[in-house]
Image (tube, helix red, strand yellow):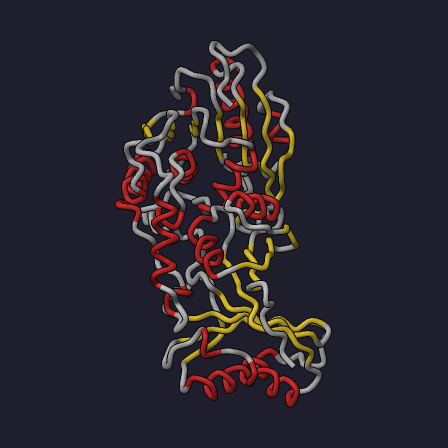
Length: 396
């Protein structure tokens, strides 16, 4: 028999990139949610209110799942019987498009296509004809309901995606520069380094502005799900459910908007030598509703103009993974180190780095805060204090 939801609440799980799980758990705890970091994210038993709030507020998670059922099945007959007992009608209105992500590991039922077919048939039996197919992260949206099915040693876990489009898709980043950084990873760089929005922020290699924009959202206490003019929310998958509670959702939104500050309490600056990248950054900042909070300029790294008060330099330099880039990227890291040592004494420095040898070019002792991946490349968040005495007390 399929396991029902706990009487105490809903089994929920915020999915995150490897290494980012503690940050997601900390974000949830800051929301008053008793979550525990696990491999691949953070889990908790919660309420529908917490499901809504997690989707709206989480900066570093990629999606929020609700576990619909867990059961053991060693044959397709067992699978069909359990699948029919799941509460599909809670999550699907008639004619809603459905997507499936099915994985089978070390189980008697190993044919993922056949498993998908059985679930598709169970859904159609419960709610009527649907359309569906294999899931693709680049195609999912709130209009399609994703179900994640995981078979491991004959144990099947069926989860319902509550988010729709991945949570890094805040909605503001329509213009990008080369090698754009995902919004969730930019937030992880900021939070993982220790920057909390109370000190000035400088990114002298800002590209299309993701780090300064995420910094402005954090400093102003704007939930990423409200990163827009007028703090209008993006659309989530749970809003399409027959059980969606619109009154509760409006209450969550009202509560989320109250702490938002009218402006950033600290200077936030981004610069880049690429004029096209800065043009994209300004457009993105305007869509996020933080254009007045972020000072963006076209400047070479050596010409960066830091804020008067000491703060944090946080950036995502190139990794030099392409052939022929090694010397240029090594020189760039050395230039970044010169900027820090000569003009930012007493500041804190944080990088998203893929190469310890390049870290050494900076000339600042950098400690590893967390490790994760960016576009398939292993990267680390490293941070340290620039040697020397700050001209003013560091705000941190």
